[in-house]
Amino acid sequence: MRRYLSFLLLTFLLVSSQAASLAPVTVLGQRVLPAGPPSFGLNSHLATRCLNLACVSEGAGMVADLGLAWVREDLHWHRVQPQPDTWDWEYTDKAITELRQRNLNILGVLGPSVGWATSFPNDLPNDVSFYPPDLDRFVAYTRATVSRYKEQIHYWEVWNEPDNPWFWKPTPDPRAYAELLRRTSAAIREVDPSAKILMGGFNPFDTAFLRQMMAANVWDSFDILAIHPYVDPCGPEEGNIAAAPGLVRALADQLGPKPIWATEIGWSSGPGDRDNKGLTDERMQANFLVRALLLLWEGGVERSFWYTLKDDEHNPYGLLAFGTGRNDFSQRKPAFAAFQTLNRELQGVTFSEKRDLFQKKVIDNFSEVRDWRRVSQPNGTLRKTDAGNAELNYNFSTQENDYVAFERSQPLSLLGEPYGLGLDVYGDGSDQTLKVWVKDAEGEVLQFVLGIVGAPRWHTITTPIVGQVEPGNRISGQGNGKIDFPASVVALVLDDSRDSFVGFGQVYLDNLTAISGREVYDLRFERGNKALDVIWSPPGIRVTLNTTLPTGSIVTRAGARQPITASKGQFLLNVGPDPLYLWHAR
Image: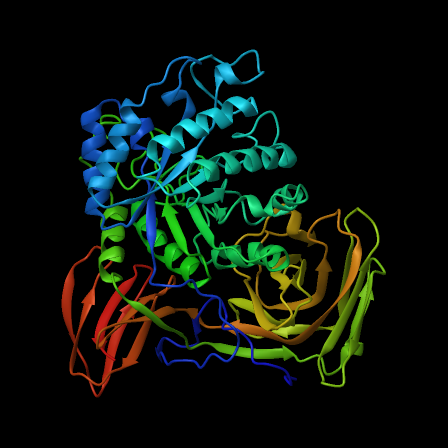
C-alpha cells in the first residue's frame, strides 16, 4: 500500500498487447538526468593504431563524418617516450591536430606503462606494459604530455580499467592505483588547473574495487566517474545496462556527487573478446549501439563513448571492418550509419519525457508481512509499518557473505509470462542488494538481482526475468538456467554488496510487481515546435501514437527518411529491434 512519495519510472517500458497506444506518464518522483542534450563520443585510437600519418588524417575525417562532439584518444607512454631520454610526439601531434581541426573535443587517456619504467624483468623496454610503473617516472610522463596538449585537451582519464587483471598485472591493486591517481591528478592540476580528471574506467556492476580505492581517500583527486558497462553478448535491455549508473551513484551519494561518463561501451559484430561464439551480428550491433547509448543517457550517464572506430583483426567491435588492415577505412558497417543517424537526429534536442505503456500487477503489497518467513541467516527482521508497507531491518556482523532471506509461505504466482519484476524501495543510502528468487515449472529456483536499496527516497528497482542466468544465481533444482513458465516468486533476499561491510540499516518495501507485455521503449525529445519520439521494441509490436497533424516523418536507423500519414489522429507503426525516429508536431 502506497502512502509515501511517488516513485521513479521503471527502467524499461512494456506493453501488453499487439497494438497499443503510447501515452505520457507523469513523473512525481526524483529523476536523475544529465544536463543538456544527449552527447556521445567514440574511442578513436588514431595515434596508437594507425600505421602511417595519412591513416591518422583519413581516420579523423571518418570520425568527423559521424557528427560527433567527442573522441577518446590514447596517448600511450611507450609511443611518446620509447626510451628514458627519447621523446617522439609525431603520431600524437598529428592525431590531436587532425581531431581539433574538425572541432572534436578530446578525452585523453594517460597510460599504461612502458617496459623500461616497470620492475617486471620480462617487459620489452620500449613496448607497452600493464605492470604498475615507477610513479615518479609516470608523473614525469604526465607532466610532459599535459604540458604539450593543455591548449587542445582539457579532460584526462588516468589509466584504463585498473580493476581488470589484463590491464593491471599481475593482479588489480586498488590502493596502488589510488596512489597513482592521486599523484597523477596533482601533476595535471599543477600544469592545467582548469583540467577535468576522470578515474580509469571500471566495471560498474562490481563496485568492490572502487570502494577499496576510495578507502585510500582519493575521492577528491578526480572530477568524473568513468565506467565501462559492458553487458555483451546480452543485449542492452536483457543485460539491464540501465542499472549500471545507479550502482555507482549509490557510492557517490555517500562521498559526494560526481558526473558519470561511460568511456567505453560496445558489442562485437562476430566472435570477440567477450563473445567467442559471435552471438551478435552487424545488424544487432547497430541496434544495440543506439539503444544502449540512449538507455545510459536516460539513466543519468552524462556522456558515453562507443568502442571503437575500427575492428581489430579478431575483435570486431568497430564501426568499420578490419578489411585489408589498419589503414583500410573503406568498409563501413551498419553501426556507422546508425551512429550518424543518432547524432544527426538528436542534435539540439531537449529531453521531454519517457513515454510508456505497460501492464504491471502488484502481486504483494506487504499488507500481510507475516506471510514472509525468515530463513537462512538470522541477520534481519521484516515487520509491517503503520503506513501499510514493510520495514526491513538488517544487521550484518561479519566480514563474510552476510545476507537475510525471507521466504513466502505461499509462493506468489506470476500469471502469464511477465517480462520483469519491480519493487518499490525507500533506501537508507547504502548499496546493499535486493534480490528475488523465482521457482519455475521445472522446479528450478533462480535468483535475479532487483538492484541496490539506494537513496532515502521512494524509487522502483526492476529486473528482467527473461534469458539465461549465471551459474551462481541458480539456487536449487536442475534445469536449463532460465525461467520456464508457469513460475512463482518464492523469496526476497537482502545481501551485503561487499563482504567487508559490517553494520546495520533499515529499508522500506512496498508493491512487489509483475511487469507484463511486449517491450517497447519510447524517449520523447523536442526541437523547436517539433517532437521526436525514438522508439524500439526488441520482440516487435504494432504501436499507435496520437498526433495533431495529418503527416509526420519517419527516419530509419540507417538514416532513410519517409513520410507517414495519420489515420483518425493516430500514427500506426510497426516497431521492432531497429530504432525508429518519428518527427511530428508537439
